[in-house]
Amino acid sequence: MASILKRLFTNCACPKGRMGRAMLKFMNFCHAPLTNWGLGLADIQDGWTILDIGCGGGATLKRLLERSRDAQVYGIDISEESVAKARKVNAKELDKQVFVCQGSAEKLPYEDNKFDLVTAVETVYFWPNLPGCLQEVNRVLKPGGRFVIMVEVVDNNSKWTDLVEGMTAYQPRELQAMLNEAGFVHTVVYRKRPSYATIIGIRK
Image (cartoon, rainbow, N blue to C red):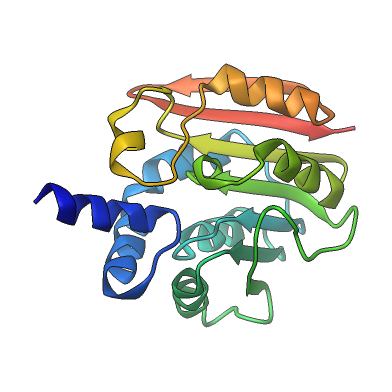
C-alpha cells in the first residue's frame, strides 16, 4: 500500500499515465479551498493578462477567468497530461481567452513585461533552481505586477516530502526571503489554518 501511495503522489510533480490523470482530478478538487482563499488576497482586476505556472488540471485557470472579466489567462505545465487536462477543462475558452502550453518555470516562453499577475498553486515545491525560476517570473511580469504563491505544505520536515519524490517544502518566510532576493518588493506572507500560506511579491 505504501508503495502504491508513493507512486500516486509522486504524480504531483509531473502527472503521467492513468495515475497522473487520477491525481489531476484529485488536485483540481482538493486545491480549491487554498486557491480561492489565495486569489482573494490578490486584488485581481478586470482585463488582466495572467499566467498560472504549474497549471495542473486547469481549475485555477477557470477561477482566474471568473475573477477577471475579459482577461487573457495563460497556463504552463511541465506535464503533457496536465496540459491535455487543462485544455479539456477550459475547452470553451481555449485559444480565445485561455492559452495552455507545455514548458518549465526555468525558461518561460513569454516576452518580458507581459503579465499583470502570475500565480503558482502548490507547485514551487518542484521547481528546479527555485531562485532562477523566481527571476524568470520577475522578467515576465509588468512593473507593478504581482506574483502570488500558494502553498499548503509549509514544514521542511513534512511527511509529504518523504512521500512525494522530488518535493522540497519551504517555510513561508523562506519564500518571502527568496522573493526579496529576486528583486520583488512589498512582499507579504498571509497564513490561514490549518497550514495554508500565500506569499505575494510585487515587481519593481
